[in-house]
Image (tube, rainbow, N blue to C red; front, side, top):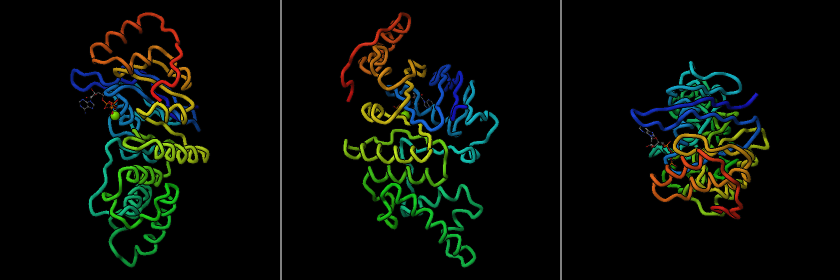
Length: 278
Ligand SMILES: Nc1ncnc2c1ncn2[C@@H]1O[C@H](COP(=O)(O)OP(=O)(O)OP(=O)(O)O)[C@@H](O)[C@H]1O
Ligand SMILES: [Mg+2]
């Protein structure tokens, strides 16, 4: 059984079809990639898989369970967590309290109980802090626990974003551009951390523009363009495909669309692109 099964997924916004008849799967224990040019529909897919948006049609199953009747806030109990392309950090809140928010979604004590000094809650709050600190350690930002999150450099905020998602103890973690704004060194470090998490059993679906990152990290990749699947395969298969190359390299949107449609109508050949986009 797949960890994630997306079947004929479509999302329309008024007249715009952001995702069209898209099907792909993520195997349990895999590191999967979802890539495509700007506006391809990647975030829209992540929004639907994480339950903050609903499909116009099609189905999403998580570990075999159809999610169509599941409410957004219940997705965390299915083992889904995500990070955001545009991070949402709260002003005035420390790094560790951001992770406690994540822990809170699985506990009876509310986040605000946990923050307000209250003798009855003190023990549980101490336990939550210890637990939160573990996730900060995983992301190597435990020394910044008491810093205000919004004052962290961008790369460290992205690490915090992952720590916060891990605090819900997911089985499938969706990462929307985890290395955006990072240099090569920082990206490699994040790749290393994600590999470690994967080795401990976490399944990952990573949306990224950084092709080198996807090549190095992912075992299976789905490429979408204009909301439709171009192809799925190993990184080598997809990044050696002319279809994918054209999807990325076309200059104007109309030009890309025309090339895409003509390529799609015929058979595409694989070409050796060397270090495409690396
Ligand atoms: N809530 C919305 N209302 C209307 N249109 C939307 C909405 N969300 C996304 N879109 C449109 O759907 C299309 C796909 O957007 P999406 O953000 O999913 O792309 P993306 O692949 O994540 O792009 P990027 O690489 O730039 O992050 C775009 O044309 C976008 O403008
Ligand atoms: Mg996006």
